[in-house]
Amino acid sequence: MLRTVTATRYVAPLREGGSLPGLCEADDSGTYVVKFHGAGQGRRVLVAEVLAARLAAALDLDVPELVVARVDPVIGRGEPDEEVQDLLLRSPGDNLGMDFLPGALSFDPAVDPADPAWAARVLWFDAFALNVDRSWRNPNSLWWGARPWLIDHGAALYFHHDWSRAAGSTDRPLRHAEDHLLLPVAAPVADVAAACAATLTDDVLHAAVADVPDGWLDGEPGFASADDVRAAYLDWFTARRAATGWVADLARVQSTRGEARRG
Image (cartoon, rainbow, N blue to C red; front, side, top):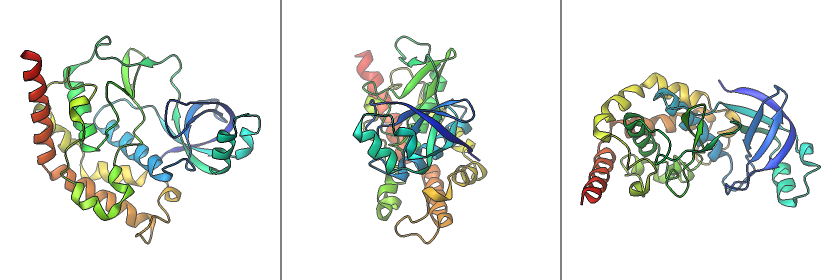
């Protein structure tokens, strides 16, 4: 389960993202990038972060530790920005913290070492989770401790913003796969697809949804309880794992990109 920390000081807003995360110190002497449930797309972004992080970890992909960050809006009283103060007032209680990696640089596969098999797993993972937000424009990857780390998965699993259409997305190709950051350096995704799917066992998927706090699932429209929402995520993950069209499309995009480079 996610550890819980209490934010003790609001350090600074991070304006790179649209949800206005903030850098906060906590009572465990750690520093975290905190995403707030009162931001534009609400709790679903926090849910996507947790689920994606658990799937990534199962695939042996590094993601900074996530925690539940308890926030008292009073920590923002010294922040002069009214937008930040309003966000904190809308986000009391449990928010999502991501361990801050001091000194980390943006990962650039054209400069930093990128293992092709690792890159193929990331490509498969992003397509599985419908993560449309890891491109050369917005890498959402850091270089720290002599290896790459994946961050910011709030845009993944976007089907949960309209559950009535979720079933129709289980074999949906990754949008804009041709712009994926790692497409030029990844080994053939077909070579890793079977192993990646086998890694995401039923036990792994159940553990992932169990890690999402009830408070981020309660009250989801169309569901009677947090466990009902968990069951819906499990159904989607299971169907996505069994589907093959999205994998074939990803392999096609990768092959087309390779042919274009050779040409």
